[in-house]
Length: 325
Image 1 (cartoon, rainbow, N blue to C red):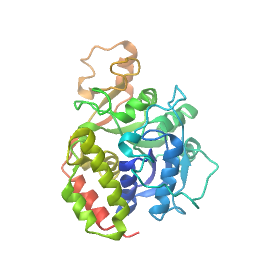
Image 2: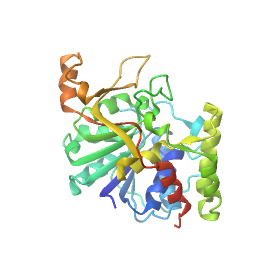
Image 3: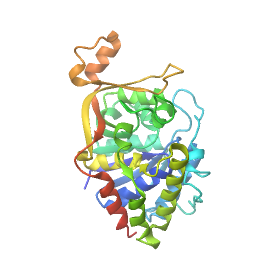
């Protein structure tokens, strides 16, 4: 069992199955879900998150909090991904959140409260843009000292998936991402270098279809995901972006990581949202402007450069095969 966890997400097809994986494994002490704008505007992702906890049978146990809409420094929504994730963000599914408890706190307030309640124990798994996390750091910079952060986003050697150089979550709010990785928080970046290698195939999908009625909703989401991925990328397997980040929060052996410093490009129209990784062992020999040199010495984290020895896709499939809620 992990320590206490918050899932900060923008559901989203793979966010949905990442949440289901966390619940189905029985090894995550999930304290809350916080919604952020990303794959869809925040009013959609909040409703989707509420609908998911209802669908998965935990609406009374896992509170959902609405997060920040728009980008950190520009209070407008960046382009959502309805063309990929469907008209609701959950494919063609109708988000039924009727009867799910509402909470007066917003996501940032909930994150700060939980970080104080579980100081030094709380892990935040962020599978969307880092806007909520950055907003919490602005409200209380000591938030960085009280949590561990695992986030899905970025790319090092792998090309971007929204521009040639940028991954979607970071590109959506690069200023937020750069603030977070510069904050001193203990972070692990799970980017495309790892997630593009965690391939869920039609054979894996057939195993879930064989489980019948308990997984009908899940299979519909995954089939929509397969269809979108094949349409845009001409591929017959899909990467488990968000589920891998959730898995890595529990078991780091799913990843091959290196330590160092991440910088996020925020100003270039060509490379906006690009993540640049400086390995720890290269810091001393690299020529950087003074302010970046100081940051490289003080704000280091772990970055996934590939998959580790343990097979995450098999673990994910096995957990969902035995879903019983």
